[in-house]
Image 1 (cartoon, rainbow, N blue to C red):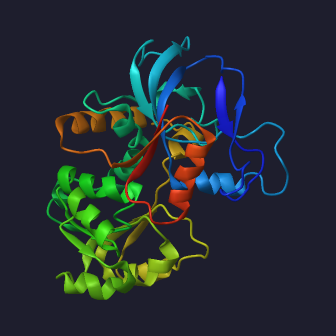
Image 2 (tube, one colour):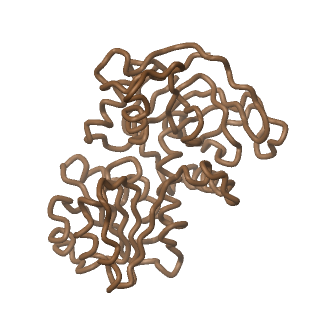
Length: 336
């Protein structure tokens, strides 16, 4: 089968930062399903893995990355019970396994959902990783529930892939008052489009949030850089509030600063359940199916913003370049 990967961690502008090659189609076993891929999406984790996996020496076998896909079930393992051949599916996958930048991929059925029927392949492929991340951080980590309806949430990084769908879920599903950060007119407009009640400039965060009418907020989600915004979060969070983050801090954060307010801090990594084969791993299957229903009903909408046609190394390079620029709004998808 055709695959695209890399042997060396190179700048995306280098010709061999991605290479096309042939590899054997995976064999199905256990609870795995073999998916024929029709569209993929890119996320910041993709370029972080590409930049860091082969810095010191060239890999003998090219590494295949990618964690957002839509496709059709080609074959099922002997222990599979959730899917059958021919099912249309969408999923993010497992960071410890070979990724979706290939014609076919093997993936555990417990982290796969039924593709939303009302969405195109491109629109559906934009969703899995960000939907799982946003849903888990809101409902599994900071534990938003019905009693929180009407409370305030600050989302730092509102126009990115995770921020875009987190705004929608926080507003439409959790019933929160959403304050999102953005600094450019186009990213601010995008946040409003996703349903943000207020959009503030992250460059003057405390001042901007207070000018919007909030002395403090009930919840804060960081999708950018926990170190950069730590002091602002400490100041803005209400007593007994909750903070969640997905970023990779370069330095330690001083959790003692939260003690006086009895504030809790929560990490979210979407890959945790698959990496550790947790007892509740199948929860990602249920989340994806729930979100598919919300997308089909029009309650939530795809965050797709840019589509490239053709599974080629040039298109993958273009998608990575856009992400690395830090100016990407919404999601970029490659249709096969």
